[in-house]
Length: 212
Image 1 (cartoon, rainbow, N blue to C red):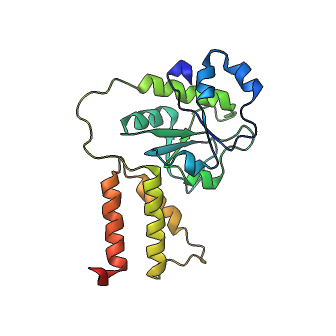
Image 2 (cartoon, rainbow, N blue to C red):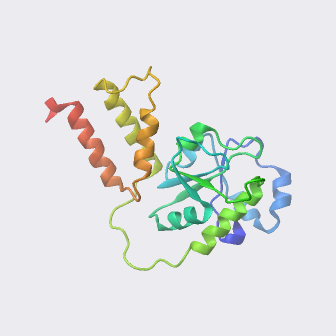
């Protein structure tokens, strides 16, 4: 991370932290390790980010947007706000629920006969692509704040509640509506916080028209 100019390391429920072996391996990047933030859940760790990119070599037929590492880096640097690249553990990778908490699925192109990369290699490839893609900020800045993951999770929850109240969605059914709603909004680039608030205001008005 430090070699590629990255310093914001967030660890999710680590089995052991701090760990002496981690400090041995960090050598001259101990400052990055010492500043790492520990979170209990993935959702908590990315709540202040405007987008999260999940790394996986396994395809999901109902996944969010799928990008290769280079395209993901290009998308990430275009966003206004902090972004997260999420890596699973060495043995199991990411669960489907963890995938759904992110807006993008990222894969690292490799020979189809052997696509395996260990965690350190995957992190280095992504960090390199981010470093190569990053450029000094020029031109106009966005006047509105980008929606964070927390903002989007609030919208998804509100949509689901509205769908249940209107009898459009039955939680006991096998409907994939919540997943499809996530997929729909994951295709909207650079969604702004104000736009999320407009949608939630509209939902609230439709749920309670008598409050007008």
